[in-house]
Image (cartoon, rainbow, N blue to C red):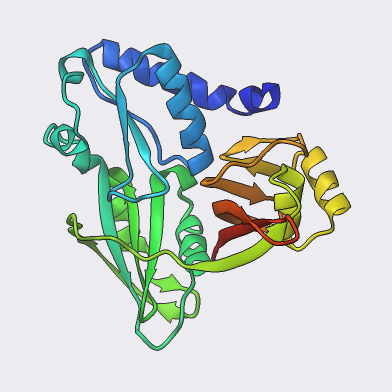
Length: 261
């Protein structure tokens, strides 16, 4: 836990600035945060009693901005009602449209955007579409710059424009299903199965601090994993553990998980 606290000192300092802005009657809006950053930021704000919501441009977004609310907005409970105050203007959706003849990956789009010299925190989710195109969520202040400057992604020419996203926008994320059995629900056993490692190698990976459970470092090989949860292992990827149940005839536990692609 100490390691996590030190890692997020800067984030917590920025959240304090947002809270001060809310005290002055303004809405404090963060940069786009990764799921891990969001996990710690939301926990920090809850402990401090701040009123806030998280939003990334659409309902199931992974990278989101935090909106710390001033007192006069604290009675508003639903995100949709908060948006009427103008939060939606902090996020634009950009369609980045390729020629349709070149296959482009998430990495291609992300790399092209970062090469413009902008910071990662002004870009939210990037949803790749068929035909070498994507929808990228961004800070409203950087949208015009991206439209003017982004002309190439990978080996393809692209055009950008602002588009409207409604409640029906629900991109299908790609996963690879993993089905296996484990001797127990211990963290090292589950890591071994998901990453195709020996039990001893998985134990060393956990002890070295290279694995996370629900976005928190976990260095205890004997920690029991309870589904559903999210598990990440550096160098091996991110997984969603769907179930750990049903003992086999040999007394092993059935594991069903999904690897994020």
